[in-house]
Each structure stands twice: as C-alpha cells, then as structure tokens.
Image 1 (cartoon, protein in one colour):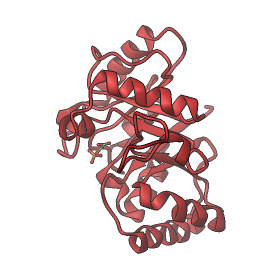
Image 2 (image 1 turned 45 degrees about the vertical axis):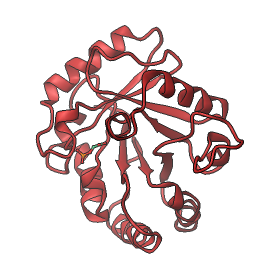
Image 3 (image 1 turned 60 degrees about the vertical axis):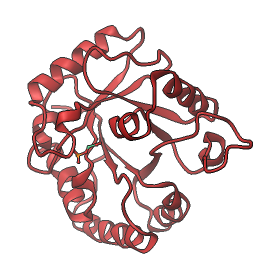
Amino acid sequence: MERKEFFVIGNWKSNKSIPEAESWLYEFHTLLQKKSIPDTTKVILCPSFIHLAPIGKLIRELNLPVELCVQNVSSFSSGAYTGEVNAQQVKDLVSYGLIGHSERRKYFQETDYLLEQKVLQLKGAGIEPIYCVQNDQQSFPEECTFIAYEPVWAIGTGTPDKPENANRVTTLLKSRAKKPIQVIYGGSVTDMNVSQYFRQTDIDGVLPGGASLKAESFYRLIQNACL
Ligand code: PGA
C-alpha cells in the first residue's frame, strides 16, 4: 500500500533555552542515525522566536529534514509596534506559521478578526498559515488551506480525542472548505497513539506539544506514526 504524506509538527510552546534547544537537535540528529525519517513524513518544529535563527542554522549544518514554523506573528506589518515580531521579519526563517492556537485565544484574547489579520500578514510574506480550530463548528479564513483540529479539552490533558471522532471532524472541515485543505489533529498525541491517527482516512498529520519536548519521544512518535 502506498504511504500517505503525513505531517508531524512539534509545538515546543514557551519552553527551552538556546542551549537546551541545540542539545535537543544534536540528540535528534544522533537518533536519526539509527533510522531516518520516512520519505512520506514531513517533520516541522515550532520553537519560540529566539530559536528560529540558531535552530535554522543548526538544521542546515546537521542536514536535518526538518522545517520550521513560527508559533505566532504580529497582526501588523513592520513599524512602531514595540514587542511584536512581524511576518516579514521571519519569512527567511520559517515556511509555516501557527495561528489561533487555543492558548493564544485564551491567554492573549486573540479574536477571529485579529487572527484573520495574522493570516493575511503570513500570506503576504509567503508563509503558510496552520490555522487552529477547536471543533467542527469553528470558522476559518478562506485563505487557509492547512487546518489543525485541536479540541481544548484534549490539549495537555492526556485525554486525546478518539481517532475516529477526530477523523469525523476532519472530514466535516474538509467538506466545508471551498478548496482542498489539509487537516491535522492535535491534543495529547504520543508515540503510543500516533499510529491510530495515521490510519484514519482524512487526517493528514499530528501536532504534538508535550511529546515533542524530548528528542527521544519525538523521534519515537515519528517512527511509530506509520507502523
Ligand atoms: P499536547 O499539546 O500534545 O501537549 O496536548 C498539543 C498542542 O497544544 O498543540
């Protein structure tokens, strides 16, 4: 059977110093000497802003098949917005941008309107938005062709959504979109349950948070996905 393309996107959230992030990459590189990443699996990491440049450099030096995704971006372009990092500033460092994660909505009061501005900023910089929704009812900007279904109750709780239900939501989201979209699932994905999501017909990948923090568990998750 032909293997489908499958995304494994590690969300480090607000974790790791620069030396810790670098050690993670060295360890990951060593693990990949045992068994490389399957050709059909696309590995993406979402580290904090401070990591994008040094991690990007190390990824190139170690020749790792890993792309980067920014966890957040300003809703404005460049200018007098103290503390913000805009899409144009990171466009040479990342291919993807995570938008609308439930933690951003909850702790930083991000609204649908603001998120749409962020999507436009990313698109304008040639960065692919990965737009998070929490259920099958939530809308997403029509420019978005990459969606992450992440039920709030499953994030960081150890209680993932059932693979069959995640697939049902994914199918619904795909049927609502005006053009073909990719949908991944996130919420307590681990090396132990990832293959169940891989086997679902409509799920195009996973977005592990906690399980991406250690190189070893992330490596296992990647290898177990398509078992
Ligand atoms: P979790 O986080 O894997 O730790 O549940 C997922 C996410 O928030 O993206």
